[in-house]
Amino acid sequence: MKIKETVYLDHQATTSVDSHVLAEMIPYFSDSFGNPHSSDHYLGWVSSRAVEDAAARVARLIGADADEIIFTSGATESNNLALLGLGRRAVGGKRDRVLLSAIEHKCVLSVGRVLQEQYGFRVDLIPVDSEGFVDLSVLEEMLGEDVLAVSVMAVNNEIGTIQDIAQVSKLAWSRGAVVHCDAAQAPVAMNLEGIAGQSDIVSLSAHKMYGPKGIGVVYISRELQGKVEPLIYGGGQQDGLRSGTLPVPLCVGMGAAADLLAGDDAEDWRAELHRRRDAFVEKLSGLTWPVELNGPVGHVRHPGNANIRFVGFSAHDILSALQPRLAASTGSACTSGIPEPSYVLRAIGLDSDEAESSIRFSLGFGTSDEDVAEAVGLIEEILAKLSKAKAGALSLS
Image 1: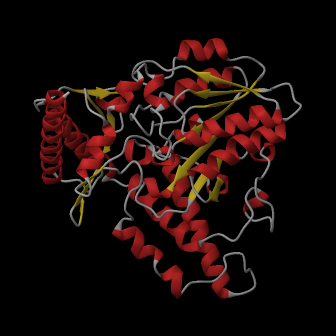
Image 2 (image 1 turned 60 degrees about the vertical axis):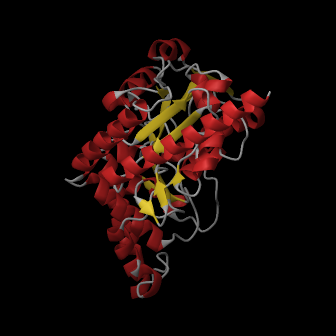
């Protein structure tokens, strides 16, 4: 898709709000604005029913029940509630280890440090291979009766790797560990109807799936809810797991987005996205300058993700020169202010120079063939200019 003069290829950072989603949200900003927790009047009942319906729609997306859906401000809060809430309730028990994949989102790794430094847990990282897949044999060796939880994201936010969550869960459950899955990137990438049956806790974020920013959910299986300590206390909303007045329009928007991604057309959208992503990579590979694809190939990768290494170039130089005509990123938007090589790319074996030459392009459902062609043309133009400048600098030295 194109936003004014910018070709937007950063959909894994955020998606636009779908027009159908926005249309469902608008009435709850004005006409149906009642507090969903006001139980004594009609407007409160209308809002309450809207929230309940939204929870049911999200539940259908992942194969859960509505009472297992807790609304949060987004996946970062969901991940915190999942792991920190679980850990705080388990302090002093026999299970005092937590296993996280080495390429989890930054917020999950940060929670791991808090569990270790403030609550005395031992936190170990599960290694991944050169394509970002969790090493299941190593995970099996790491598991023991002292492991409280295993956290593995469904789809990586930088290189698009789609993990075998069912196999991860099988191993973890065989040793009595809780399975948490950060699935923020998954709704666009894959059918999620079985993910609740493969995990104990699942985190989602609306703005990664054509819904609004500021809203997410955490699915917590009914049997586990009493073992999670709330992070926010107050009026006891959402069965006391997450107090606070719910933002009805945002909840409605997330429910509407969940319906879109669970609909009959979603698989066709994913197939078309896959085709365009492959065409984009193929066109880049045909340029004069060598490029490499970081991560896996085929259907075990997010269909819109292309993490490209431009050999001999700086990713920051390329992206700066492309502004404002093309939007992409060097990694997760949540860590874009940190001037260091991507820890995800380092975890799959790239050195610092290779990581610093890599750009994540993420196409979306609205990306057209014309957008792909224009993006490749812009990149070719910039690489030519940077090559010329580099050659000129060398001749002067």
